[in-house]
Image (cartoon, rainbow, N blue to C red):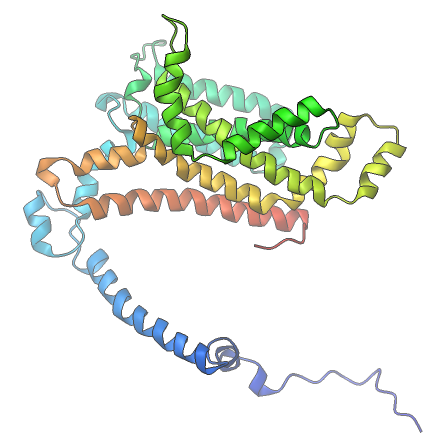
Length: 365
C-alpha cells in the first residue's frame, strides 16, 4: 500500500528557523569567529555613533554670528556652511549673478532625470538635450538677452562639477562603444589603433592626463592658437573614461553567445544592423552594473581638476576653509560636499538597480 503525499499540505518551517532571532543566529552568531566579530562591531558602534550624533547635531551650532561662538559650542559649526554655502556651491561666479548657475544646475539635473524616464526615450529626447545644453551655456556665459558675460575662468562649484560629469559621460559612452567595436574588428589596422589607445589610456592615472592637457598640450599647439583650460580638462576626462567604457562593453560583447551572431548573419543583416538591433542591446544589459560604476567614478573623479587650477566643488570648499575669519572648520566643509557627492552617486546607483530589475538582466550587485 503506497502513501500518496502529493496533495499533503506544506508544513511551516520550525520556529527555530524563522524570525529575527533565527536570522541573528544564522547571520551574526553562526560561529565563534562571527560572534567575536559581531561583538567587536557592536562595541565600535557604541563608541563611535553616540559621539558622532552629539558632535553633528546635539552640540552643533547652526546660527552663530562668528567663529568664536561656534568653537565655544564644542560641536559642528553648521553656521559656517550657512555663511559660506554660496561660495562652496558657486565658487567665484559673480555674487549678484549666482541665480544663473543655480538655474543651470536645475536644468542639467532635470534633463538627466527626464533621460531616466522611459516615456522620454524617443528621438525627441535628443532635441530636449540640445535645448537644455544651449540653455545651460546661455545661463553660464551670458552676453545676450541682457545677461552679463562671465568667462568660464570664473565658473566653479557644483555647476562646474555637473557640467564636467555630464559632458564626460555623454561623450565617453559613444566613444567607448566605438572603441570596443574597433577592438573586436577583423581589420588589423583599426584593431591595433583601438588596442594601443585603450591600453595606453588605461595604463596611466587621470591626474597625468590632466597635467598633460594643461601643461604639455599647449606646447605642441601652433603659435597664437590656444585651447581653453576647461575644455582641455573636459577632453582629458572624456578620453580617460572612454577607455574604461570600451573594455567594459567589450566584456559584454564577449558574453553574448556565438549563436546570436550567427543568427544575425542568417537574417542577412549588415554589421551595423546586427550591432544596433541584436548584439549591443543584449551586451549593454549585461554590463549595466560595471558601466554605472564607471559613471559614478567619473562623477567623483571630476574633483581631480583641482590640481590644474579649475574651481570645482572641492576647490570651492578649500577656498571657503581658507577664510581667516572662519578658519578651522574644514571637517564641516568637506562633510557638506561629501553629502552632495553621496546624493548624486546614490541616486545613480538606485536608478541602475531599478533599470536592471526592469530589464530583468538577472545580474545583481
